[in-house]
Image (tube, rainbow, N blue to C red; front, top):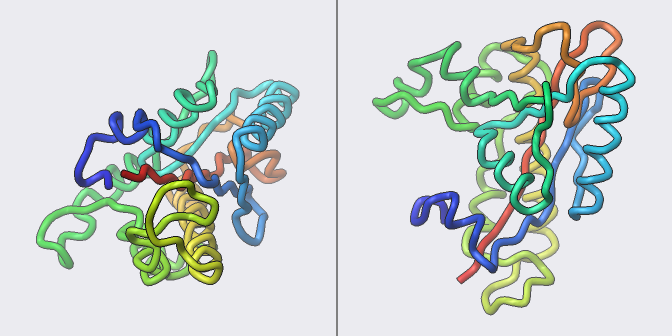
Amino acid sequence: SLQDIHSDEYIADPQFRVHFWTVQQPGDAEATIIRDEAGMKAYIAARREEAAASGKPLLLAAHNASFDARIMAEKYGLDVEGDERWVDTLDLFRAAEPNAGMAENGYASHKLEVMSAHLLEQGAKGVKPKNSAANAAMSGKLMPGSDAAGITATAEEVAAFEDYAKNDTSVVLAALEHFDPSPERFVGVSNALNNVRRNKPGALSGYTQAVN
């Protein structure tokens, strides 16, 4: 759990696994899942080609983006190059709503679930309520195929969790649309390309586990 160890230790743990990534482009009905390193490398390579053809840099986006960026760099060797950059919806949300979550928690919180609730209240497109039960059901359980000892999640639990994960990415994409951080010179990549109305970034999320 990231509550117990620093994210650097978590990613460096020899038992750390990336189970899948979720990605989404503007206009997509929902996020899609990429399940392996080769698939993610192919996806980023394709987005880079499209960005190069447009003459605009690659733009990657996520919530708490430094975590996803670190995984992609350290585990896949994928790092931003030249004018490429990450956009972090955590920073965007903090800047737009510095006191978010105060009424519920007594302190400011900019977690993804708080941002999701805020966007729902604002009527942002593409946002559905987070299914926290699906996430809770996976607590302490292993993904099927793990070689570690422990309780393996059922197929139904995994399917519900994957839907939960895809919704997370849809929330990030909605935040990018809502807070509109992208200058015109960027092409939306890592899940958002060639929006004919306006070039905007999209969203990605990685879902991981390190077992003891």
